[in-house]
Amino acid sequence: MNKTALYDKHVSLGAKMVPFAGFEMPVQYSGVTQEHIAVREKVGIFDVSHMGQFFIEGVAAKDLLQFVTTNNVDTLENGKAQYTCLPNGNGGIVDDLIVYKMNDEKYFVVVNASNIEKDWNHISKYNEKFGAKMTNSSDEMSLLAIQGPKAVETLQKLTETNLSEIPYYHFTVGKIAGIDDVIISNTGYTGSGGFEIYFKNEDAEKLWDSIIEAGEEFGIIPCGLASRDTLRLEKGFCLYGNDIDDTTSPLEAGLGWITKFDKDFVDKERFAQQKADGITRKLVGFEMQERAIPRHDYLVVDVAGNEIGKVTSGTMSPLKNVGIGLAYVAKDHFKIDSEIYIQIRNKNVLAKVVKLPFV
Image (tube, rainbow, N blue to C red; front, side, top):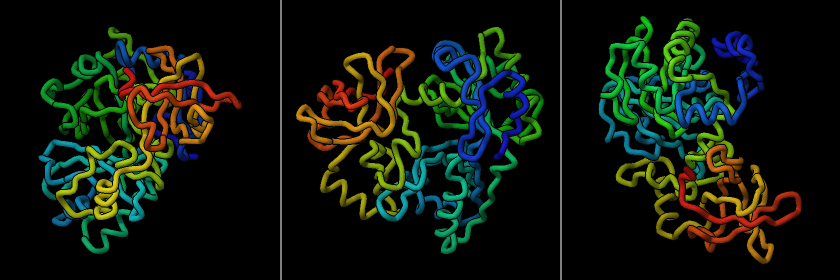
C-alpha cells in the first residue's frame, strides 16, 4: 500500500486511515460533519497527494491534449486551467481531469488517483501518433487543498504572491513558506473556494505545518476524504467511479459544458450523434422527502415501482440535514420537481429531482 509524504503526520494527529486507490489515506480526523462545516464556514486542509500528475511537453503537447480531451485546449492561456474529460473511444469516460497550461509547449495534467496508470496508458496510446514528451510525476509530487472562505487569508500570510489576483481556474508558480516552485491553483473540489498547491514530496511536512499555523486564528482543521466527499456532493460535482465511468457519456453526466464540438477529438462523432438524437438517461440531483439516506447503487423507481435508474452518490447533507444524491434516471424523469422513489431496504422512499447544486 502506498503512503503519501504526510502519512506519519496523519497518524500522529489521530486520523482514521483507510485504503483508497492504493494509498493509506485519512478518511476523517475530528468527524465528517465538523470538518464539513469548517470548510463551509472557515477553512480546512486536505492531503490529496494520492492524485496523479503528468507533464505533457513539446511542440505536439497541445495537439495531443486537444485530441484526447473533450474541452477546447485552444481557449487556454498561460496560467489558466480547465476541467475536462478523456473519452474512451466507446462513448464512455476514462477519467475526468484538470489541464493546466504553463506555456505553449508545457502542460500539467492532474488525474484521479485510482486512474493514474489507466490514464497514462490511454494518453500514451494516442501519443504514438503525436510524439509529445510525457512525464509521470505522480510519485514525486504532493498536493494540499486549502479550502473554505478563510483559505485565501490563511495562505496569503505565507506568500508574497497576491492570491486575490488569481481568478478561479487560474494558477501561478510561486513561493509559499519559503519553498520555491509551488504551483498555486485557484481550484478545489469543495465549492467553498480556496487553493490547491502542488510541490515536491520533501516539502510536504513544512508546508502542512506552516499552513496549520497560519490558519490557526481562522479555526483551520485537517479534513479527510469523507468530508471531501460530502462537500463535493452538496455542490453536485461528479466523482469518477460513482457518477461517471467507462459506461457514461459526458452528455448524460451533465458535462456537455466541457464537450466542445468546434474541434476534432476522440468520440466526437458519437457524442454529436447522441446530442442530435437526445439522451435517454441523465444524471440528476435529488432530495429525499422524508428522513432517509440514499446510497450508491440503490435502485430508483417510479410511482408504479418500475425501475427507472440507479443512485450513483448519496449522503446526508450536513448543511441541509436532508438526504441528497445523484442518480441516472430515464428520460421522463429529468424535469426539476419530478417525483421519484429510492429503494431503501425494500421500501420505496419518495424523493424529488432538484436543481444542482444542493447548496
